[in-house]
Length: 350
Image (cartoon, rainbow, N blue to C red; front, side, top):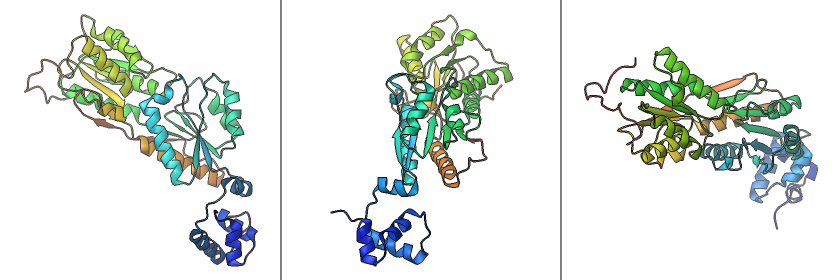
């Protein structure tokens, strides 16, 4: 039979309430020596706390709600979402908390969604890539619930993002240094912050370096491989085609690889392809995908740390945005531009 706080109290000859205060850190103070003895006996008896009972004492559920962007039913299959959820669960677990994954099979009004979240009696919320059209962040902020946002910039809430601009610039620098001068881009839905930032960085780079920006070489995808194939095919089927395609995530880069294969183009000999995220998905494609790595584990750890600080100090962090560095990871889907001589392959950026 599992040990209870009554067993600990009986062993030490103290009251049950004193044991409870020692284990839960309050609400009444306990001398440090008593607390130390309680914890020792708890370990000896292999005591496992009753989370519901502890919640009644501390007013905390030790549960964090995690809300991914449920744009489609298949969103949870996204390699990025899957990797981020796993990283958040690990980070939350390090603090002794559980996660409550909030998804909805049917469309839900933003106000109803927030009420549903809070009815679950969670201590804090992590929003993953909320849409710019969503009122959920505003409703959470209005209720003053501890909340941290990942992969989006939301006014009034602390956010953790990857440096999208630096990532796109690093990829473009490498491609330009290896002779590429014509570029296509497959972006994500503009309601996503990352999608907007990555397309903006791509346009900015071309403008700064006086490279051609052709509207027919820019396609909008939906962050899935299937949703990127048509746009990539249209670019590659034109009389003039880009020698390199950047995609706003790894899945859409896979769609570009598929379109190239259908048209008989070799990657990377005829076309270079670069993704974004560096999820495990990028390493199993053929050819293996060059991509811009987001530090997903670090993003989750930083976000959860900010949330825990808010919950413990009962005050929103002063820091509005924490931007983490990206890294260009070169694999087999990129090469010098077609027709470039060996002497030219180490060229400089324009």
